[in-house]
Amino acid sequence: MVSLQIQYLLVIKYGWNEKKVKGIEIFLHGIPIANGLGTAIAALVLKMYNPADWDCWIHSYPHDCTPTYVIRREEDSSDMVVTNCTRGDSAEIFQWAFFFVLLWAAIAFCVFVMMSIVRVVETTEKRTMRYVVNNPIDRDSEGQEQGRGARHQHLVMTAPVKRRGILYACGFLAVWIFPTITRLIELFNAEPPPLLNVFSGCFIASQGIWNTMIYFSQKFRRIEQNHWWEKMWSLLKSELFFCCEWGGMQLH
Image 1 (tube, rainbow, N blue to C red):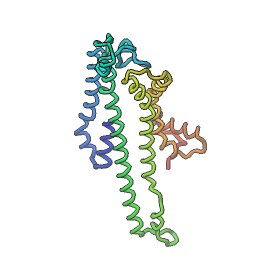
Image 2 (tube, rainbow, N blue to C red; image 1 turned 60 degrees about the horizontal axis):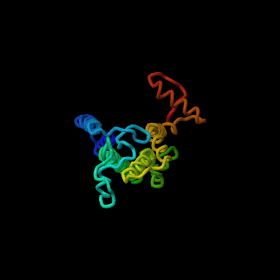
Image 3 (cartoon, rainbow, N blue to C red; image 1 turned 90 degrees about the horizontal axis):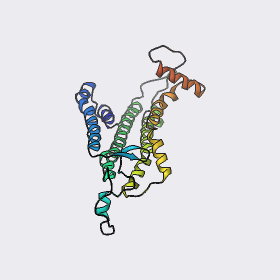
Image 4 (cartoon, rainbow, N blue to C red; image 1 turned 90 degrees about the vertical axis):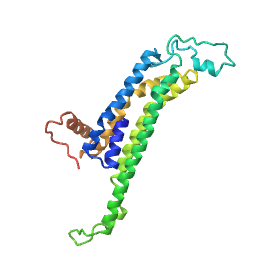
């Protein structure tokens, strides 16, 4: 996710060409892979993988054991001096160090990149509109100057870019807000509500669905068909059978 956003930022805002992007492609692929493998292997060596509510992940075992960091935090009011966790001692801290801190940093970075891209598109479009207004050299069939009305036109390119950026950000938030709240509650050695676990398990699996819907929404709106099922069929034909020629899908 971050690698894609870096590529968008370099190409759209800083004007990098394909050759320059390929020069850093090894880092865009290598760093995420190294991070994933490193944290996964570290958690395996530290025996952190245990039943974790809705999945098998980094978690203390038994589920109701008292980790070391809680004993140290409550040493004045607790009689325990040694953890009773047989596996995954202080796993909640590793959940945040290995995943959630990086996750929310990535989400914040993606929001920043989307805002930067929207600003670039908006600035470019405003400059184009000012040029059209100040240079009304085109004339229609009746000899009337074109471009005078451009001052009152909407930013037709900026609005879709901004809308898609907001939708992607909302998609990330919808997917990860419930798991984050759940793990935050567990970090303070409390038991999350069962309904929160249900929402967490359901929404994590929906990340791809949200991304797909957002990605195809713009193309869906551009299909010139009268009914939504006709638009859906045209979209499916163009994506699933892109190597073949099909009629009925006309974009404007």
